[in-house]
Image 1: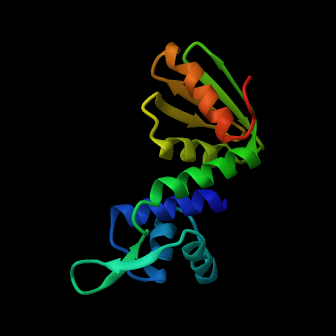
Image 2: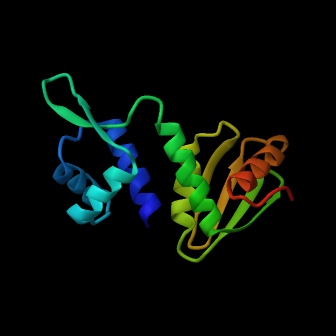
Length: 154
């Protein structure tokens, strides 16, 4: 899935220096994501990656200042709008129903949000279980996720 791959690219370049498209493709392969050079090139362009100084005289892939949060949020909004069928809650558990096969990408995207109100997620094939830190946080999380998915209030 494109969004999952692109989020993994952002994660990789945030954790280590990547100097070439070949290195990026290899890092993705190590994560179980096989890609072609053409796909990497398109992803770099879509993510607005640029070459930034690495401190050793070379240039590595990075993001323009201040953009990681916006890129992740935009991708999450698109992913939720495209894949999310429903969002419902009980106690401190939130169930996000998705199109078959898209739950892992949605779960990973929700994890990337790093919302303090979310303890964690577990994804199956078409369902993501979101565990809120406490029952009093559930309303906020559901509202936020529904807003991101373009679903409006319950």
